[in-house]
Amino acid sequence: MFRKIRITIYILFLGGFLGILFWFGSGVSINDQKEIFSKLLNISGILFGIMGAWIAIIYSESLNKVFSKDYKTEERKEALKEIDFLLFPMALSATIVVSILLFFVAYPIFRQINFMLKHHLLIRSFSFMGIGFLTILQVWCFIYVFAPAEKLKRKANKEIRQSEIDQRMKSGVQKASKKEL
Image (cartoon, rainbow, N blue to C red):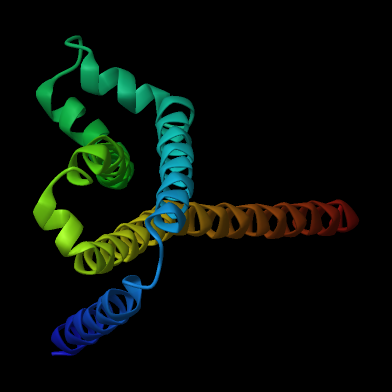
């Protein structure tokens, strides 16, 4: 029940946000939009690189298992599950990069089409709405990638604290047993 309500709220927020961008997008020059696209392209590329580095460094053993035929199918599937949470946002970032590159290639062609020239304000609105949609996807990728890192950090800190407590208890027991002797 709450999941459906949450999804409905997300859809309404997304629709409202994109509607606002469409409404005001006609007033944003295409040069300003190209600048925003360029910045989004850079951010997507950086996040793509970070995710690739995380997979290569942190999950190198799992990555080796996935692509090596020396391991059983079950081990390979298990290894894929370990890195799967990074593969989807990585693919999404790559899709954003490709979308923006296609925009840069298509823009000079669209400028020569009469229909596009007649309806340039409408095209600007759709373009600005596209920027907003790609930005939301990129923010989601960012959160999706860094949220598990925070979870892992909390888990590691908890294990360190528990280890310290165990060590203090162990040393306290040893001191107490020495006094008895």
